[in-house]
Amino acid sequence: MSVLVIPLEGTTAAGAACPGTGLGLYTVPQIKAAVSDSASLYSSCSYGKTMQTALVADPPVRLNCSGSSNGVPWSWATCSFDDINGWANAADEALAARGVSPDASFYTVYLVPPSACGFVGLGYVGCDGSYKCRVWLSADYWATGQAYAHELGHNIYLVHAGKYNPDGWYDEYGDWSSWMGYCCNDRCPNAPQMWQLGWLTVQQYDASSLAPGQTVQVTLPSQSTSNSGLRIDVSGWAPGVDPIFVSYRTRAAGDLQLADDVAGRVLVHQAPIANSFDAQKTVWRAALLAGGAWAQAAAGITVRVASLGSSGAAVSICRQGGAAETAASCQAGVDWDCDGLVGAASPSCSAFLGSSAAVQPPPCSPPVKPPPPARPPPRLPSPKPPPPRPRPAPVQKPSPPPPKPPAPKPPPSRPRPAPAARPLPPARPSPPSPEAALIRRG
Image (cartoon, rainbow, N blue to C red; front, side, top):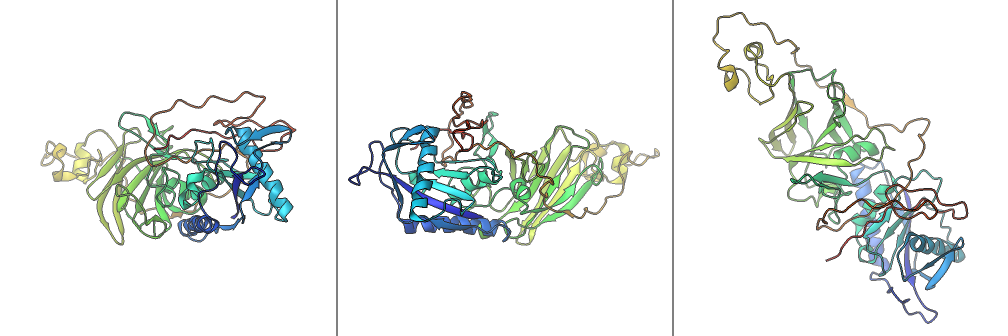
């Protein structure tokens, strides 16, 4: 993963900062340290599968206070897509004049000086090589490694990691178990994103390996030190319900800065991700301690944690056979209703046990099968599907923002930052415009 990092400054002929902007807040050595932190995260979280190398332009590239790119004007006084795209094109030209090829690296990060821009970062979602793969970081985050990891994550088809708040509002950055959530603690991606990238191997359960009324016992090693997790595909009996991912996370390796409500817990996520190019949101559902449980009612799945330890987490997965125990399930010691209790230990069995009536075996409760072999990470489809339409998405600061209405779509004639990017006109070879969401500071 080859990355070119270009610090930018807008200056007058006399070397002063252009109106509306300022000079960079961090030195080149500080920038290099942050880039190294991002590279360490990619290496550790991928278990060596994705190695990041970077070149930092030194000294920073100085641009005029205004200019034009492919006939489209730009300046430092505003922060439209035309401006940030113009700065990037002008920086590429300036580097080429120094003898540095801007195309030598597949990914390019442009470090924006203090300016009218209110974002933390922007990055194209998905890059297949048919256009320049770009990221922009604002002035306060030049020396923050997790910000680089997050925005470059967009380039490799990751989208934000969120959760639903108690009031039902989806906070698209609210998953503290992923670097695709709020800035700025260093941590690895969550389990569904790790699986999407091919960094995680999962034990796979589906309709063929998890029957109604069946409970399986699983030991999950820490995802932080072992590239393993668990995925339950419920589509065979609950169409429309997203697959369930279960992982155990501890403070180790790339997860050293995990938040308190994540570290040392079994995490449950849901995501419809199907392959490495499938840029889909993930939803953090639960963080369980020993004795904790989470249930997906529509699929009748209950995840229960028996114990946590240094060697892993003891977890059970139960698929509900019915809403209540039956005489047959009580007699057979099957947890038909997935309440974690069987036989005499289950209050709902008291009416059935001890009866002299003949008891038939549970209708759909075969002997418990051993876990299926681990399913390898998703492979890139062949031939490659049409590349997703790129759109940058921002990193947010740690304090959650209030709910925001969706960004309006840009007019067809001028690409603007928006979730659904449109192709640029022929005269402008730059990629489709990004989604830009302003982040309030403070």
